[in-house]
Image (cartoon, rainbow, N blue to C red):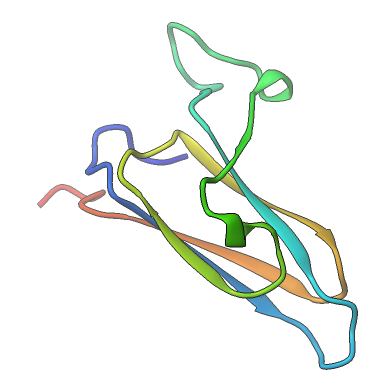
Length: 99
């Protein structure tokens, strides 16, 4: 879950780790504005609507990729759909800790 009170600028990076000759890792990064913790309009996790990010390299991606959001979604997830290896998601949000 991202911080709704912090700066909306969010950086997202996916790194791919696999052995040479193994089937390629295939992954997709998704985002949602649904929030199962919202006290006024909670959406149960099973009913959350997920959208592929607006970065073609991160939809059925096979290589490392990076993108930035100008508006922070509530949640971001990575789904690995194929391959032997690991796709790892790193998310940073500017000014998420009060100064």
